[in-house]
Structure formats: C-alpha cells, structure tokens
Image (tube, one colour):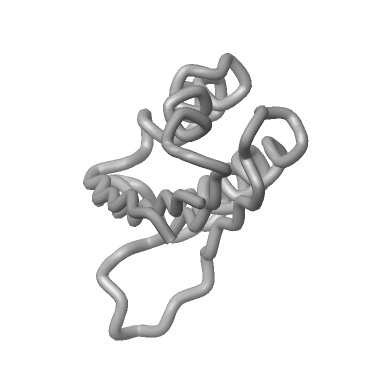
Length: 100
C-alpha cells in the first residue's frame, strides 16, 4: 500500500470566511473521488486543526500501489478538483508519498 499525504496553506489574501468555504469545497471534492478512481483505497481531508498548526488542511489518502497513485494524479475527476478549487487557492503545498 502507498500513502499520499499533502498539507496545504491557503493564500493569505483569502478572508477567514472564504478559507472555510474553500476548505469545505476541497474536502467534498477530494473525498468524493472515493470509488471513482482505480486503486484509490481511502481518502480523507482534515480541515479542523489545532492553533499550533501551520497548515490549513491535510489530505490523507491510500492507494493499492505506486502505479495507482500515478493514475490518480492524472485521472480527470482528480484533475478537475485539483485545477478547479485546490491549485487556484493554495499558497503552499507539501507532499509525502511512502510505502506503508
């Protein structure tokens, strides 16, 4: 199994209300991919954080193998969420993939 973890910081120019709306849309969009992409075993987006955090949200996803992760990256349903809501609003993205 392969884990794919991403942390995002949203753009500073966004108001607190806009950030909450965007986080909810990202969560719904990414978690909605479950069952649509071959090899995607689980996908969760964490939007609630402690004050000590310096990221706005986190993606925690699991794939059958590295090939499944690569397929996810280019799958049209994922690209639509990434290009439609995530990338336009993200300031920083940090990713770690590993075999579990």
